[in-house]
Amino acid sequence: MNSPTAISSSPKSLAVGVFVFLLVAAGSASAEPGCLETATQIPSPSRALAMATFAQQEHQAFGAQTMDAEGRLTYAGAWEAENFRATAQDLAPWQRVLGYWQATGVRLRGTDPDAALDSSEPQSIDNALSRVAVIDAPWSAAFISWIAQRAGLGNDEFVFSEAHADYAGAAWKAGLDEAANRPTRYAMRACDLMRTPPRVGDLVCQARGAGSGYDTFERIGEVLAQRPTGGEALPMHCDVVVGVDAAGFDTIGGNVIQSVTLRRLAFAPGTRLLDRSYLPEGCTAGATGTTGMAGCTDRHMSRQPWSLLLQWR
Image 1 (cartoon, rainbow, N blue to C red):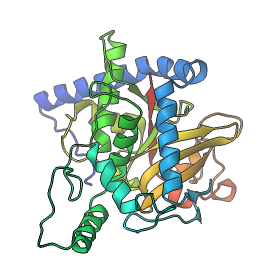
Image 2 (tube, helix red, strand yellow):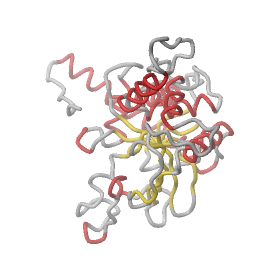
Image 3 (cartoon, rainbow, N blue to C red):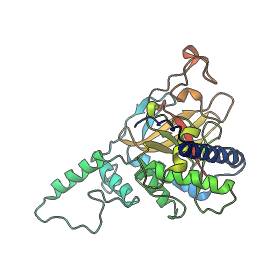
Image 4 (cartoon, rainbow, N blue to C red):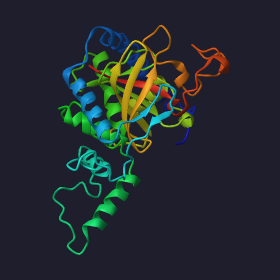
């Protein structure tokens, strides 16, 4: 993804830039007290817990692939195109992924229940082509959309999409509506992950790749505040929080190392906030909360530009 382009110096562009800055700043400042109050005083609602439960069930169905707090793969589960089944009655991983896609409304091969098989095409070939479609299409947002749908969320409460940026953008705008005392039925608001403790059922998100330029809450917010649903691609990834304790929290995400994967993330010592060593710059000398390379834990595959918490309202 290209780095953010600089705003030109024309009066019109400067006016737009100032407006967006004020919009993001106002949303961040006004949402933060609500984010912290909700995180520390309000239990996760029942549908948030349901999302976490459905994610845990899918994690087990995929063979329980797991990453430890240092971002290392400690247990390998089944991958997306495998024919693995825990029992004879279970769906194979590739069939489960096709099911996730149905929540998005995108018709991937094998997801249309009304489509009749070509009588000249053997079942084995149809299955093989469906498995190829699963491999070729990133499905992490479809997974989140599916568990949200299973938890009972409606179209006015969640944007079911193949793009994380669509439902994250709707959460950002819901926070702005709250700040302006406008009514909204959307289930989540956007909060700063580095300042807000997560709860079970919340979503933790990142822009894909440390070089994307959208590596902070404010920077990704600038894009989400302007981007319409279905707009320009903004590569992201989100996991759902499935457990929280004094030392950290567990998340589950789809299409993480080609599976439904549980990831452990640690809190900074003495806090309920994500340790900054997970950020791309987390182990550089002078970074807040670290002591440079010598005192920093390497987070390997979990070192990502984490920035966004989608919090149940």
